[in-house]
Length: 148
Image (cartoon, rainbow, N blue to C red; front, top):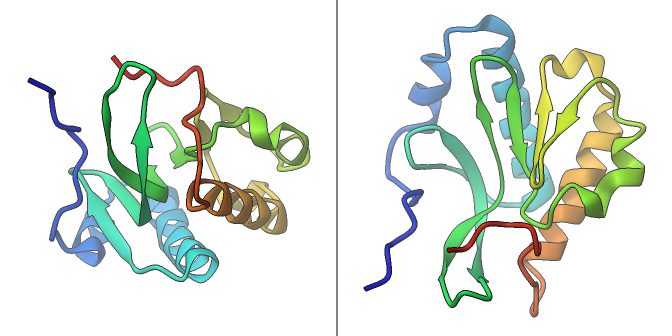
């Protein structure tokens, strides 16, 4: 029997979640990201699981046969940095990300410690391109994503 995706959309209050973020920079950045991602995606914010603020959704299917739905764009204000999720992977945006400013990356994540230190126009374009890629018919999950 297939295991369902642990990160599901919830009916939790996004504003209450953001107000409870302890770190003042993460809270400020989260409020800015809600505005940016809502503008770029045209979707309202929704809490996915206990800590991911997502916008829109896309359907994925791994080569293993596992499939499900996930936020098409999203972020999480983590303790050490804000994590931005790029479902099409960071490699697809390497050139743009090289001009973003201070950040680190994973396969599908961009970690930013302070939005004041990055170029907001670059960040917006990365989010716009990633969202467009995953909400386009025929999107394929990043080959390095784990889908066991």
